[in-house]
Structures are given as C-alpha cells and as structure tokens.
Image (cartoon, rainbow, N blue to C red; front, side):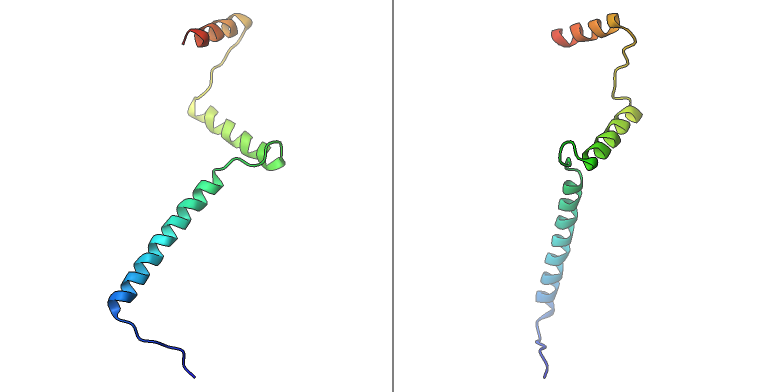
Length: 81
C-alpha cells in the first residue's frame, strides 16, 4: 500500500521555499527569545545580569566615580542633561 502522490515541480519548489522562510523566521524568533531577560531574582537572572554587566564593562559603557565630589558632579550633569 503506497501513500505517495505526484505534484508538479513548481509546487514542490514553492513548498520548499516556504519551508526555508519558516526556518529562517523560527531561527530569528529563537534568537529573540534567548535575548529575553529571565525571571527577576532567579539564578538564571543573576547569571544573565552578570553577563550583561561584563559586556558593558568590556565595551566601556560605564562611568567610574572615585569620590563623593565626582559622584555629585556626575549627578548634577545628569540633572541638567
């Protein structure tokens, strides 16, 4: 007993193209889901948060304040911005 059918090559190509597009969309969605923040306070969140902080430090996205005077100047600058 055979369950095969014949379809034209153009329809097969169309189906394969749709499958490729779906695969790309699923891959994109998976990437977005992986980038979502885990539940706040969970072990996964702490690990995620630490990794994000290290990325910021490596990229230079931080301000180093060495004393109260520098902190006050930075806060004053933020108020006027």
